[in-house]
Image (cartoon, rainbow, N blue to C red; front, side):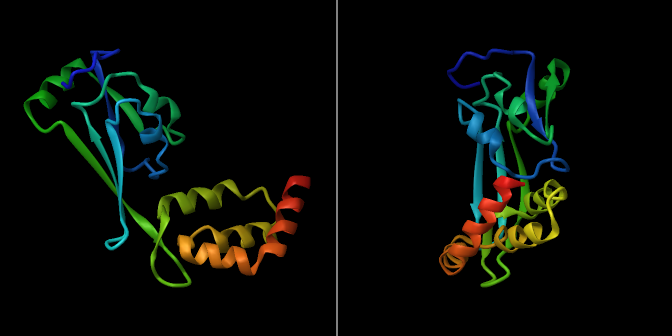
Length: 161
């Protein structure tokens, strides 16, 4: 199981693919790099790869997961895991940029979560933010340059809201 000492030897993380939105919080929090994110901008997928052989049992991934997509499996299930593959992969679709057709750095699930989170804002704010969110980096840069004054006003108004 790697060279590191495990904090919690009787449980390991498991990612629920139905709940995971691919936000990267778990991989950013993992001190042992047991969770790695791989984006394939050609295929339009994000893979969240969990390598249990690197897991030190700190549970940081589960603590930061905003969707509670990480559960911890107990000792009995670990026996069957030790007999087989110690990696698990969740694959999600990346959102397509509506301008150029390239893939964005956000998953489709992240875009849907953003829509849900924005419901309290007035409609014109949601519309403006949703135009910007699914853009790829290149189109986002262009959009920012072309709409800088409008976006400054939008930021100012959002702070007041």
